[in-house]
Amino acid sequence: MTTPKKLFIKTYGCQMNVYDSERMAEALGGKGYVETQTPDDADMILLNTCHIREKAAEKVYSELGRYKDLKAEKPDLKIGVAGCVAQAEGEEIIRRQPLVDLVVGPQSYHRLPAMEDAVRTGVKALDTDFPDDDKFETLKSRGKAKRGPTAFLTVQEGCDKFCAFCVVPYTRGAEVSRPADRIIREAQELVDAGVREITLLGQNVNAYHGHPQGLAGLIWELDKIDGLARIRFTTSHPNDMDDALIEAHGTCEKLMPYLHLPVQAGSDRILKAMNRKHTAESYIRLIERIRAARPDLLLSGDFIVGFPGETEADFEDTMNLIREVHYGQAYSFKYSTRPGTPAAEKPQLPDDVMNDRLQRLQALLRQQQTETQQSMVGRDVKVLFEKAGREDGQMIGKSEYLHAVYADAPASVLGTVQPVRIAAASPNSLAGKLQAD
Ligand code: SAH
Ligand code: SF4
Ligand code: F3S
Image (tube, rainbow, N blue to C red; front, top):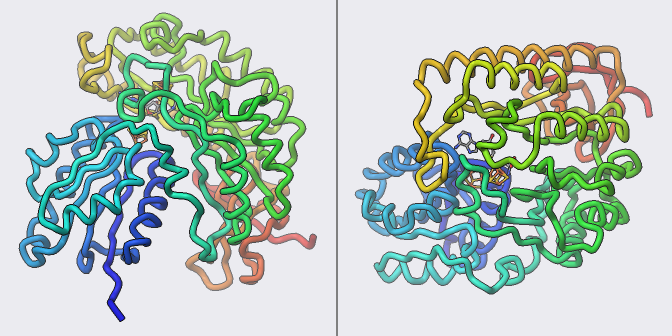
């Protein structure tokens, strides 16, 4: 019997990369690879990378540098770079870091097995095409192995929005939706393997058009799958929140009351310069409509501070929008210049101004998150238990609002949804007591 080769994958960036890493591991599984948790005993190392901000991209090169000794010790070790840095920089990666054997973009990773054959003969392999063949069809069905209770499922890729700061339209290409029947088949396979909650993924997931009724139509199809308890989706664009999707938040029981709906900024002048194609007012009205459909919805967002040209008054508009909307959770970033994007041409703000604004914005968001967490104390939530905690007898899961929830419970709760009364809140998690069903 041949010993299996070992694959170490390190994943950066968004959930779509998490999904892609799984699929790459499955593709290489067909070539006899099994996953390992450390680079030290790997026969192949794959970095699945993110290009969204400068720091994210630079991390890749410092990580690659660390493999120098490993490769010297083990000449058969192959090192690959996948994901959005691979797409954005292509061959340049091999020029800058000759340790790299293989560069594969996010649209061509179904070709990994063939590329692996090539690198084993000692040549370098590069594929950053946007091929016509559907990578999901080539990869076919998911592994039959038993899985944890939650899974990601990519339904849409790419972006046609071209926000002035963003690399995604360049690294992931044009918006493409997978046909609904194939998604439903994949969802069924996941449920058969033990999955209870599926998060539908897309760079603009609500621009999904692989079903005549869009994302809402797909959600209603998935709602029919017995054994699937929960549906989520991310990330959405405000301009693609159609009436059917808003309504589904009120009427589809499996669709969880959590929505990540980035606005980026609260100043119309800046939103226009960002090419967001919506105003602060239209976003606030949209939130009102979604909350009318689902009053207890937990809202999450993304913010960028220090976009070129942002004045103190513009920044105050963002703070005011946050005060008006009130977020349960949010992500915020300092603007980062990305090569090739329109905003990169504009004069940049000084770093100290950006740092100061980011601190103020994060303090406000933190305060809102703490208030939201505290408001849960005494309330009953439904928790899908995912894993054992560090303390004896403790289990961890997620509420319908995506809070991490700790509770003392038997291991038999794993993979099931149980009522929990919240007794204590901290900024990032809740603790509670299991209730009798
Ligand atoms: N498709 C999603 C998210 C894309 S990237 C959407 O449209 O909302 C995730 C987040 O990274 C963005 O929402 C934005 O807040 C942030 N981001 C993107 N480009 C950035 C840049 N150049 N500098 C700082 N943050 C950025
Ligand atoms: Fe980037 Fe804007 Fe597309 Fe989101 S909508 S991926 S921020 S270009
Ligand atoms: Fe990063 Fe690419 Fe996702 S740039 S955020 S990994 S789409």
